[in-house]
Amino acid sequence: MSDDVAAPAQFEIPEGYTQLDWRRGFGRQIGPLYRRPAERGFTMAFRVEEYHTNGMSNAHGGMLMSFADMAWGNIVSYETSSFWVTVRLNIDFLSSAHLGDWVEGASEVLSTADDLYVVRGRIWVGDRTLMTGTGVFKPLQRRDPRPGEKAYNAGASQT
Picture 1 (cartoon, rainbow, N blue to C red):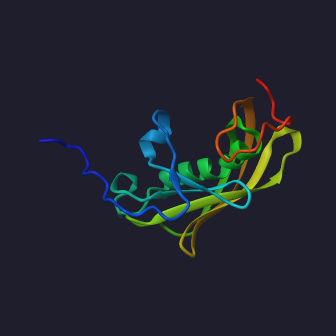
Picture 2 (cartoon, one colour):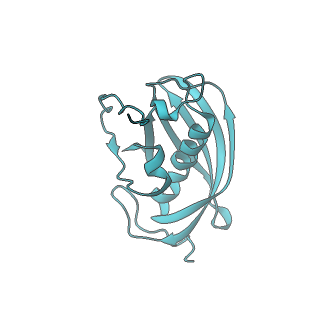
């Protein structure tokens, strides 16, 4: 007998979203994650599966924070085609996500002073906001642009 969790139920991915091909590291552990092009950058998403939940069958706060970190920091990838790190993440939890919910998130750049990206972000399900907040992200190392990203921004550092 196995103690593995049952495979996630099949569902229809909303139009325009493609699954991110993360085969290693933390993204693989919490995925699958999805993204679609937005007016500026990308909107990221995931479906709440049983392994994302807490004891109340809601998405665990740690999962939502991890998702916010990736969804909001993704604008740095879009703008600079660089690897980046999170300097600060401030989040206000406003509502919960339930098993089976399609959770989306995106951010906008507020400032790029001192080679730091200050962003404002939102995480939502349908018309219900789950989280809002701000983040500070630092581009670290240039890499080849991925599909949909801008060419490298000379303002990003090369460490």
